[in-house]
Amino acid sequence: MKRLLNRFATRWSQFRDEVVGLIRGFQLLIVNLALIGNLRPAGLEPITVIVDSLREAAILRLLWIVRLLPCHKILVVRRTCDLSLSMQSDFGSESLLIVTSRAFSKHYPLLAELRHQRRLVVL
Amino acid sequence: MKVIKQSAHPSPKVSLILLDWSVRESFHLLHYLSKQDVDRDLFEVIIIEYYSRVSDAIRPFEDQVDSWLLLEVPEDCYYHKHLMYNAGIVVAKGDICVICDSDAMVKPGFIRSIITEFENHPNTVLHIDQFRNARKDLYPFCYPDFSEVTGRGCINNVGGKTRGVVDDKDLIHNRNYGACMCARRDALIAIGGADEHIDYLGHICGPYDMTFRLVNSGHREIWHQTEFMYHTWHPGQAGADNYLGPHDGRHVSTTALDALISGRIMPLDENESLRVLRMGEHQYGCDGEFNISPNHLIAWKKANLLEGKKWAAGNSSRKIWHGFVVDQMIDGFVAYPRFLEHPEFSRFKNQLEVHAANEERLNERLDHLIPFRLRVVFPVVTVFTYLSRALGLTSLYLQRRWGRFTHHGTQT
Image 1: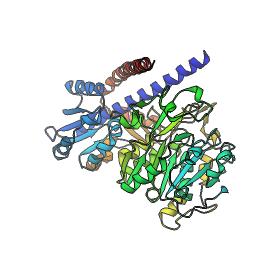
Image 2: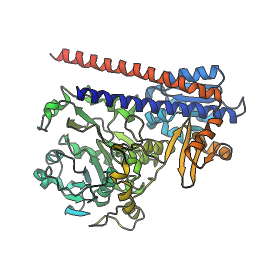
Image 3: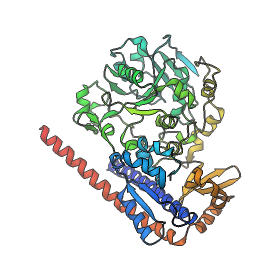
């Protein structure tokens, strides 16, 4: 019984640590996006945000609808194949590309190349 | 530092660095290294013991050990694997350093695969993933067959390859970066070796710190698609009750992730012996030449890491608070939104950087910077994240149980 309780406690602390990390990362994204929105005049080059979960994408859309965040396009990259190579060249030229640190670290072999472009911000 | 044995190999190609901090019960990798299909002179085996124990587990395979060093760190200090990596890199004579598990099994072509990979792609950092079997009846290690390890009880066999190698969803968490990492010794020296920062003390550490910085310096990361290691269950493998440095909730160091994200190449805390090698003052480390900073022996004292009876886990000079990066400076705290680290936004530094003498004052000032409407959203996001993650993990658990059940069903 004690072993079972210990196991449960370990799993719970792992789950809690992970979710706290997710929440911190997402708070960082929305606060930074809001501040970027304040700094940049409207109508400037578009913002593209890369996230790794549908949950984050849904919340970002909601926050944009209620005008808490600036207008932005959202790309959800859950698997490496979701980000096609042909699209990468489009990013650098026109839009400010913002990628969450979680999405970046999950797919860094693909996204590390983009980092060398001037307009990639990893949050 | 005490040298028990020193390598007589004049110029091996590969140096295997195996670690112990007076905990290892078995070094059976050495048994499998004696069965390799390459000339024994092509590789050397270096054992680095953190404390002063001369392990009995090594004795049966002593003929396979070329160099055996005791770092003689005082027993009241906590273990820091990166210090051991650095000691290994300093004494290594091979062109390629291999940092790997010493309690895993490898096939006879293991060393040959590493040499071939570096002959074909010299500018790479090579990782070899590990099949892991959770069967407790294989403990104590009983030299099972390779097929037994990849068969019943194996938690990551996907069609003959590890789940990490075939994964395209979450490379960092699904691949075992600590199983086996190989890189050219000169490349490791050029990036300052492993980072001896206190954030890597204890369980949250690994050669991926160097992998990420090698990638930042232009090396290509490769995961071998056909060569694997094989690991069987033993007690304490999950690092329970260990001191944990800052991590992302899934035991990957956030300090290492920060290095990857920011493109940093050099370590936060470079070892003096590595610095000497990097500056070209020596080529190889000799007896007694590996330096351990006296400051480490104070900072890593177990007594300084405890809060009551528990480890004061995750102490770091850098924190994230409500979307701001908070750095602790000598004269107080400074907070800034992360995008200021990007050159395009650095001109807004004076406008958005917040300084304060203590953390409470800083948090108050940051609260004023974040719009009220956005702060109201935070608790909603928190609840939503907990619920959706719980649902996601439940579904993943059920999928895996179902997968194992049907797999078992088709076998019987």
